[in-house]
Image 1 (cartoon, rainbow, N blue to C red):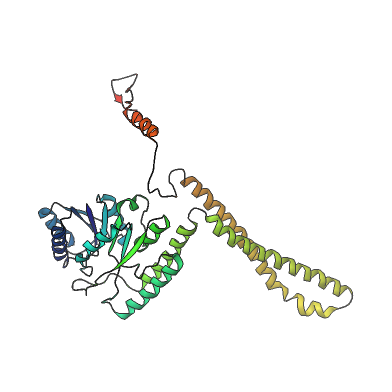
Image 2 (cartoon, rainbow, N blue to C red; image 1 turned 120 degrees about the vertical axis):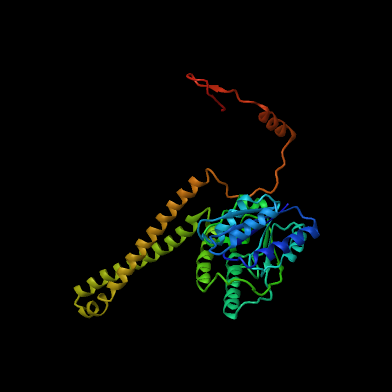
Length: 351
C-alpha cells in the first residue's frame, strides 16, 4: 500500500485538482492507495473541501488541527495513521507533480529507504532560490548527507522509519538526515517544480533563521545525541584548561612583580601589573565556563541514561533466530494467563 500524506494550510483552490491528479496516477499504476490530508488550522474552506472529497472517496483519511501547529506537526500526525508500506509526502499547492510518484516507487525497489525530491529548476523568486541553495549546501556539508534540496516537500519513505523518528519544531526537512544517522539509505530524484497557481507561499525570511537553528539541533542530535558529554565535556575541558593556564601565568607575573618591587624596580609594577587585571578576570570566566559545561554534560548524560531504559539508539534491519528460539517464543505466546478474581465481588481481571 502507498500512503500519501499531505499537510494543508489555506489551500482551498488546489485540493480538488490535486486529488484528481493523484487518483489518476493510482488508477494507471494500479496502486492500493490511501490519501491522508492534515489540515494545519486552515482559515479558509480547505476543511470543507476535504470533507466533501472524503464522502466520495473512501481512501481518504483526514485530520484537522484546532490551530496552526506547523508543518512538522502536520506530517507527524499523518505518519502516525499511515498504514502503507511506502509513505509519500506532497505539498498541497500543486507545485509537486503527482506524475512523479511511479518513478519514486521504482527507485524504492533499488533498496533505498528514503528518496528526496530535487527541484533542479525552480519557479520561485531569486531571493528564495539562492538562500535555499546556500542552506542546502551547508546542511550537506555539516551532516554528510549529500542532497541538493533538503527543503523539497516531495519525499518517499519506508513506513518503519517513523517508528524510530519523531518530528517536532521544524525538523521535517531533516528527516533524511535523521534516517541516515540510524543507518537507512538515502537517495534523491530530480522532480518537476510547477509554478504556483493557487494560494501564496507560507514561508518568509525567518524560515532560513529557524532552519539554521534546527540544523544545529540536528547536528548535535545525530552526532552527540547519545554521548552529549563528549561534546560538552570537550568544550568544558578546553575552556577550563585555558582559564587555568592563564591564571597560573598571571599569578607568576604577580609573584615576579613582587620580587622586582622588593629590589627597587617600581617601573615594572606601574607598567605591567595593572594590565593584568582584565586578563585575570577572563581567566576566572574561562574556569567557570568550563566547569559549567562539564556539569551540563554530566546532567545530559544522566538524562540520556534514564531515557535509554525505554528507547534504543540503534536500528535493526533483520534478525536471524534459531528454530529452537522460535519454538520457545511460539510456546510462550500460546500460554493463556489465568484470570485473577478479586476477593470481594465477581470482577475478573486479565493479568
